[in-house]
Length: 203
Ligand SMILES: NC(=O)c1ccc[n+]([C@@H]2O[C@H](COP(=O)([O-])OP(=O)(O)OC[C@H]3O[C@@H](n4cnc5c(N)ncnc54)[C@H](OP(=O)(O)O)[C@@H]3O)[C@@H](O)[C@H]2O)c1
Image (cartoon, rainbow, N blue to C red):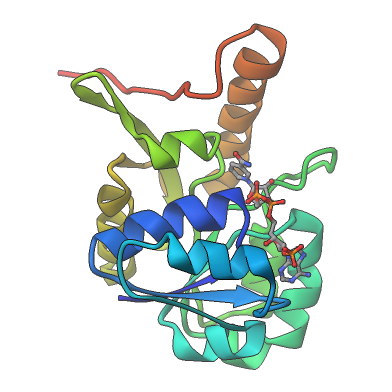
C-alpha cells in the first residue's frame, strides 16, 4: 500500500519503519522536509520511504496515518479535505486534556467518503517498535469502517507485528480512549514501563 504518514515523531517513525520493512511505500508528510531529523529518519528506514510536503504526501497516498498533535487535526482536515476524502484515514492522535481524545466526530463530519479508523492510540510507541513480549505478540484494539478497508487495517496492524482486535465502528472510539487512559494510569501512575501492552485471552 502507499501510506502517507503526517508527523515524523515517535509514532510516525516507528510505524513508518515497520511498514517500510513490510514492503509498503511510505511517504512522510513533513512541515520541513529539509530538516536534519527528517533526513535522519529517512536514512534509518529499512525500505522505500520519502518525505514530501504535507499536501503532496496526502495526494500520493491511499492510506493516511494521522501522527501529529491531536489539536492540529482540525486545521489539517479543513486545509486538505478534498484530497483526504475517500481515503483510508487512521487517527492515532490523542488530544490529551480534552473531553474526547479522538477526532471521529470531526473526521466523519468533514470527510463523508473516507474510511475512518481509530488505531495505534492505546499504546506507547515503544510497543509499535517492539510488539513482542517473549514469544507473545501484543494485541492492538481498534475500531472503524467495516468491509475491505477493515481488511487493509488488519494487514497494516499485522505488518507492525501486533495482533489486530476489532471492536466495532467508529462509535467505539470512546471505549478505546478509556483503554488509553488505562495505559496512561499503568505507566505514569503505577510505575509500569512504557513497554507495556494488552493481550486478550479467549477460548
Ligand atoms: N508518543 C506515544 O507513545 C504515542 C502513542 C500513541 C499515540 N500518540 C499520539 O500520536 C500523535 C503523535 O505523537 P508523537 O509522540 O509521535 O509526537 P511527536 O514525537 O511530538 O511528533 C509530532 C509530529 O507532528 C508534527 N506536527 C506537529 N504539528 C503539525 C502540523 N500542524 N502539521 C503537520 N505536522 C505537524 C511534528 O512536526 P515538526 O517536527 O515539524 O514539529 C512532528 O513530526 C500525538 O497526537 C500523540 O498524542 C502518541
